[in-house]
Amino acid sequence: MAEKNKYSIIIPTYNERLNIALIVYLVFKHLSDVDFEIIVVDDGSPDGTQDIVKQLQKVYGEDRILLRPRPRKLGLGTAYIHGLKHASGNFVVIMDADLSHHPKYLPRFIKKQMETGASIVTGTRYVTGGGVHGWNLMRKLTSRGANVLAQTLLWPGVSDLTGSFRLYQKSALEDIISSCVSKGYVFQMEMIVRASRKGYHIEEVPITFVDRVFGSSKLGGSEIVEYLKGLLYLLVTT
Image (cartoon, rainbow, N blue to C red; front, side, top):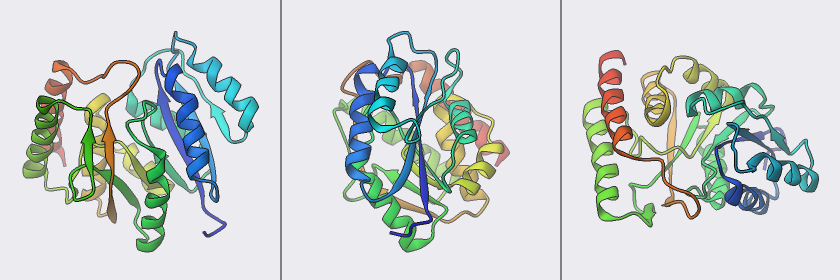
């Protein structure tokens, strides 16, 4: 692997005490020959997530695990912007802390980027080799339906719009994120649509998304309403 590339992995957390140590372990396990840092952006979790991260810093080193907390829940989009400020890599990975995104896919993302020179590599559940584990049929249909709806209306040229497991060139991410306005669930979709509109080279890697093992899922009726509002907004503005 080229020596010069460094990967900053931004993981936003809120009450992920049970997951964070495992995800960090898995990242180290699967990226043994890559220069990387993990930036944990914790939004004031009351469950002691930050205490676990501090213990992990003792194990792996504060140069490899950066804890960059915020006082309270301030939304996903701003968590990435906050993490980006502290990123020293020329590539940035964004992934969830709840183990729905398995770190074993990271080498594939990196390999795909190196082979194609893409500005963005995104994990997709909706091509051969990808999938979803642990969702009931309703949840699968909702997600799939949301995706098809967005595809039809927005034509982004990507098969998985709402996925949040992605590798970005840092410069591309900074450019795209500065033009995004949505918060929460719609943010991921806006990022990829804007990237597509700006003409960035986007590649996809099949992943299997695993529903969270510990803690509760954050997708409810209000998120679906948010999603539809976000879709309309993107339709009008991009």
